[in-house]
Length: 135
Image (cartoon, rainbow, N blue to C red; front, side, top):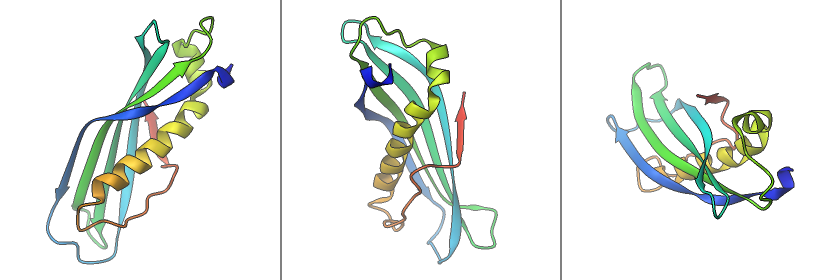
């Protein structure tokens, strides 16, 4: 069944970046990803969408205060090649690993691109963030 589902790209619905002072050197970051339910957006095209909110927070070494934050609200799109296949919430939850693989790549690419024209350009994020929550 999963071979009938195609990744159809993504849209950045909104983004923001905030830098709290000049970066001083070493530090760490956390990535939080909230994944919403899948929903049908175009019945004729059998197109589905998953809303995703990705947040990257950077901290200077030895500080609990955020040195920077970057957020991206994303729509991750899929099409189904079989009109008989219904992507229900149950199907989505049972196959979350499949959809999460695409979401992880989209989150990485979106957040790295958001940092591109900032003093933090060059930060390489992991492909699979560890803190993914399905809401």
